[in-house]
Length: 317
Image (cartoon, rainbow, N blue to C red; front, side, top):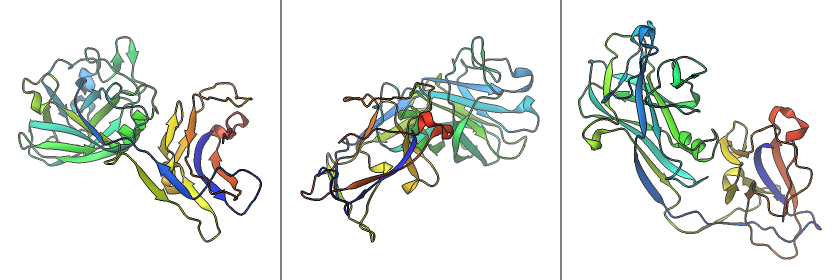
């Protein structure tokens, strides 16, 4: 099932169960933060440098040109796999580069997620690993970009808000939960677009690329009353799920309630024909019951590829 858009409880119907009520109680994890130094990074260059690896250099570079001979991009990997819990709610995530030097123009940069791994000693404009090419020269990208401006001031910092990109990674959207980015100059071709940043190999650890991630809540528990609307319905958006386990993930989808959905991507697995008592993959909403009142459930959803194999979920009470 792709995209459980929301759940609606209608208290006007008797006979279903007494297990649901208008009080939603959630228990988010206590707020936590981690500052990660880049685990892998390199500059990739086009043209005659398309097969040249720059992974051991103490600098990263960006430059934009209509001639790929002069184009430079920076690729980075951070270990969010072992440092941030699965399906944690990311409150903020900042990707930070420190400028070493550059030409005089102020430039706009973009940071895209990279959906697949690369190896620092082998990554180039064409290759991501030894014997493995990018599907498209110049690095594979996915999702939406984050943007930031860069000047030529030495020691200045360039900060990208990559909160949603890290959330996608932590939710397992790309399989591996390492956060990977490519930073590019997104402006027009210019000989003065060239900029340098400190890399993982910089002798001063304080200027190396960083990813600062905050997740959870400032309190250990909270309660939110979700009352009936004018039609007597109680609307629970997918963002109100208290537990998302296994292969289910949150994602942004236009048209979903609040713009957020939870879904399980089509992996080609056989359709589950019997409900499991203790499933590994599930989404949970918590309620305290109001005795004597029945509820009817409505689910808003969309099947991957509109296929019958993806069009169903089991409900457990």
